[in-house]
Length: 222
Image (cartoon, rainbow, N blue to C red; front, side, top):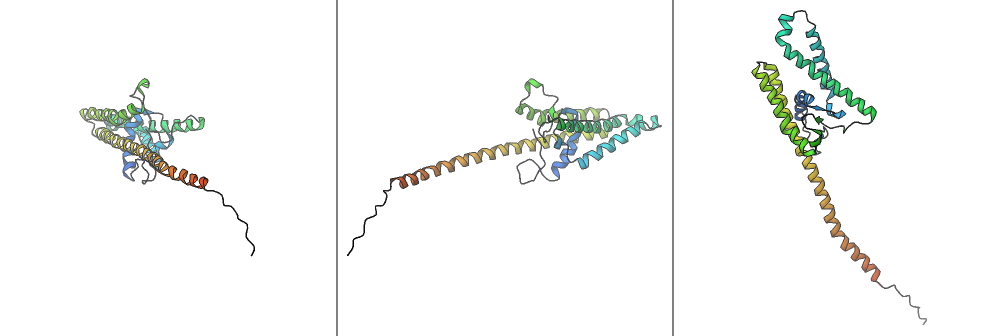
């Protein structure tokens, strides 16, 4: 399933502001459950790239902090989360650039291949089901586990990511169906208009061919 961010008058699933917010909130769960992304799927890079670098730098700084007992140990899970998400983002971004250079990249807007879906069952329908239903359920379950372990920040992060994945993938799938429907309607309209014009065209040609040529009669002199 491809995710596009283009003009809102196109049936692409893009809603200004809302789509960008959902995309950013869904990114942590998506990076853990998918691979082989399209290059343009990682936009807006002006937002995600500096945030990822900042989170990565903050995680490394906290892990090298002197006060282990006072700072790192109580927030070890959060530090691991802040280290894992930007590392995955930067890794898959570099992989997409490398595939672009090798000319083996998938569609630029491709939202990633599901790790939860076996290769032999990989069809567009199954991929849509996994991305809309299974992946949000898995991320929501991870949030429940974090809630049981009393990690409030990670609980909120996984809950928001699960909700964002569900709504963003549902909207993209809906607008994909609408594009296919509009394409089918345009094809039907073209066929109907063509069948209406063809008889009149042939009728006009038949009239022109059935007319007798004019015979010039000589003038009579007075």
